[in-house]
Length: 271
Image (cartoon, rainbow, N blue to C red; front, side, top):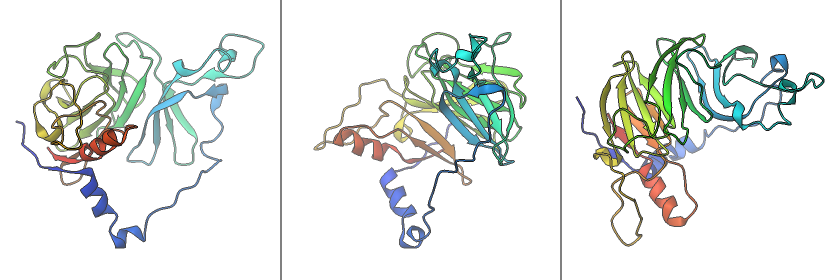
């Protein structure tokens, strides 16, 4: 049963997180050139569309072999060239940066996509991988070692944000361990969060910004008017907090108006 939720602006969240006490403990980051370790079998990695750290502190990536040009992957087509060979789409690293496994080659019922986006390892050790292809995209469920289990999202384009059988270029996903439901940020084509049963793939519920019914109405921003009450594209990332709040974001756009709209849409929406 859907629950109505409260919405807090991303600006309010940022202010809360950057209180004086918190500001003194802001972490600093620097590149570790030794991580990951040398990849096996002359692998080369394309653009990365998803990254996740599981309960064992293993790092998973969903990368795009199709983003590599002919020169970058010459070893896969020319016997006399040593480097390089496209790595599998899904790669697991241990905390030290050593490759544990890689998988994602096409198989029965599993035609691999070209635009991987998002990856999540759930509490049952299933691996969820997204693809936000222009044709519609999908989210797939695999065992830890890459055996295909289930697909959410029928092939081909859908009918928009009211369609519960097709996805609209999904960007990210998260599984709630309390309900075993998968929440999908959907996405680059649609304007919603959509929820399915993670065991059966059955549709459960969906919503747009502020908990409204999803809409594909063109969203515009007028600095002198009311804030838009729907998501603009894309609905890009999603997470669930320990107190059962769903965090949703869309990336910052270029114009000043779009930037403010993006900040105000990056809020916390209760499940």
